[in-house]
Image 1 (cartoon, helix red, strand yellow):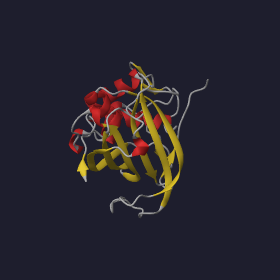
Image 2 (cartoon, helix red, strand yellow):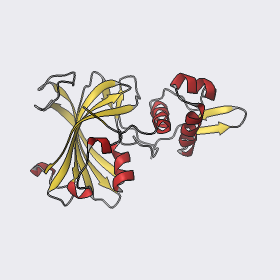
Image 3 (cartoon, one colour):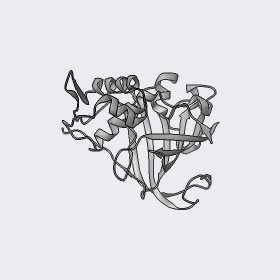
Length: 235
């Protein structure tokens, strides 16, 4: 397995809090623990925690009241690194991480040729975790015009973060088709379910703001460890 670049620690903490709020583990109006206590519990420096809290506040999910504390505020839609990542632990939430086991530049299979304009694509295969629990197997195809060579070490644990900051590609919308499928014959031995096992399945097409299809992905996930959850605001 190849190690991807970890997101900055403050972003990891921010994203963990955002997902905990979305899952309802932190109730609207709840007061967070004192910052020093919270930093100790999370194993981070107080400065890192404060930077993460500032990010959560900027996204409208926290009221920071001088002399009183930090209070949770629920919002239905948040522009976060994992805004489009819809797998959660059965209890809800969970911070996503990934192990990449192959990145190859290949001719696009015919079924994927509808996205992008280049005949080749970057195929990324990786394992997905939530709070260190292995939950999914992923295959992602990115158009070959985005960059000539992509190595596993170039990638961050959030591909959309990598797309935005390294390739200038901003994913603005996704279409997910949910069903069941069997694990493919390239499933690595490191996955906890065998080749041919029936799992939950997500086929996703992702678009940029100008409605250009930029990515196609397939995800096989263990429904005994994770749920697919899509939250939407009230109309």
